[in-house]
Amino acid sequence: MFPVLGGTARRCSRALTLVLLCPLLCVPLAGCGSESVTPSVSASADPVERDVRRAVADWSAAPPAALAAIPLEGWSYEVSAVRVDGVRAFARAQLRYRLTGYDAAPAGSAREVELTRAGGSWAVAADRPAPGALPQLWDQGPVSVERGAHALVLGGSGQSSGSLSEIAAEADKAVPAASAAWPRPWAGRVVVLVPGSLNAMAALLGRPADEYRGLGAVTTGRTGAGPAPADRVVVNPEGYGQLSAEGRQVILTHETTHVATRAATTSRTPLWLSEGFADWAAYRDSDRTPAEVAPALARAVRRGDLPGELPTAAAFAFGGDAEALARAYEGSWLACRLIARRWGEAALLSLYESSGRDSLPAALADTLGTDSAGLTRAWKEDLAREFR
Image (cartoon, rainbow, N blue to C red):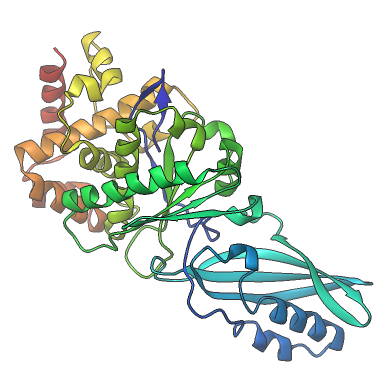
């Protein structure tokens, strides 16, 4: 995520390692069938339930016409339970689909399909997220689609084609920048969701809106290797709109770097390394000075508040002191910048990869030939020198 403090951009783009089974925005289209629903139709012995299941199967044979602009494939509803209440019925189902060219595995969404009976037959009257499930972007209203050379941008209700085109152009720049910083195999493309408002963004992510207020964007996805739905970069239209052109580009490059490095990122990867690396990629070709990029940390060091350790996972928690959060991101960036300058960019990449497999002490010893105390000492010396 990328917070906006005092009207200026700060690097706080935390990648949420959420497995969003209903990625708000995106994903593919190829064969639109209901093959996964059909078995559940014949499996039911109750004739009324069987009719309900058949009605859902017929209705879900292809994506709704309103979603025609979204590149969807593998669209299917798998019914797990049916409840009949007179002339109404409710089917619990799992929606599965892919964004064509982006999702390596199906995305999913728990749904509740409501049906009504008239003249002896069942017809779908409503389709909504199951209780407790996250909504899809299209549950919030019409979805607009913009395509870039490396990006698919899905806009929520109220988003103009002009603003979505600008974001697609910014994402098209972010992808090669991320690839230059992370010269490892990855998809080389990104899905960006742009909800209609901060509240709509929060609803898609299932968190309070205040947690995202002032942030430019977040990334959702599964950590580790293996087939998975493509990460979604979810833009906060309110926070993003407050940023300068440079700030927006930094945000999307940061978030796209999270997408690029996802296969190498695991629960072992320290947050200071994953967030610092994403900022390092975003500022890699910038001529900004450390004082310009890390103003909160610069102020702290100059008043004698030199941090005693690299940022811990707790330092990245949202909802607390915004200045402290900014210092955590800034310090992480400066740690990665130091590693790239002292040990080399190749060593920084190796450390990232190794830390996702091994303990941090082992990764530091293998890639940098030092330990946590040695790296921390070098980092503190660098901070004191940069901000004296």
